[in-house]
Length: 324
Image 1 (cartoon, rainbow, N blue to C red):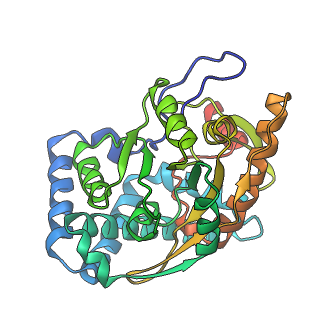
Image 2 (cartoon, rainbow, N blue to C red; image 1 turned 45 degrees about the vertical axis):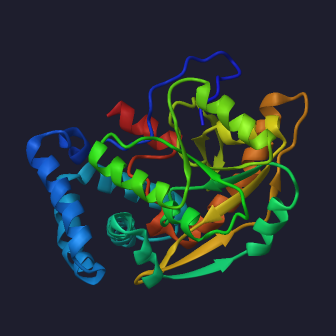
């Protein structure tokens, strides 16, 4: 969600995607052929076999992306500070493994959304969703890069409301086209995040009319961010979701969709959050963000290998990396 910085800071480029060897080479012919091969495999092969092959691919990917592997270990040292380096290394492998499961399920379902009938979903907190939808206010479903956030629109019942999903387009057109196909299967209205104000105005209108918007609140794209305490250390979080909720007087519903097993997920709808408004703009932003972050910490701590962040997240780690 892009909004101008209160101090007049210029907008920055899209930082949603992690830098990696794969990203730097994804537009070359060999890598494009690999992506096409992966998409074809998810169309024709069973998930159990894809997961088995995925373990080999994950090992190769880690070898080719050691900087990302080390960055994940740094992040995990903040989330789970009492563990040994060896344990952090094992959990870092788990992040890559779980991310491969996310991709496999996502693209397996994108070829035919009816395949979701073969999956098991447990929904927790459906009463929170009902309460928010009955309020007459706009509802912001606030997700994170945890589990498989793309599947919520396929399983959550939103009455007669159409969900507007805000997303940062993947730099790989092949991967993004498959994601888009899955979103459209359930009548989702896509709102691509661009460097400009059009998306903000459109979302504001949807929410003021009592609509539903889904977006992610744990990663900067064009938003310059605001520093808050996250697992005891300063980290930048986007201002957009909070400011959008404040201006539209919408309800924020944190939603998490962790992987719980083979073809198994839990959809967790947390207690509704109401954003405080007032004259102290910066203070209100931080107060409201801290409400959200307290909930994020709860679930990221519970599912550390399912928070898919492949670059240093905390400011001290970023500064240390920049000095090297």
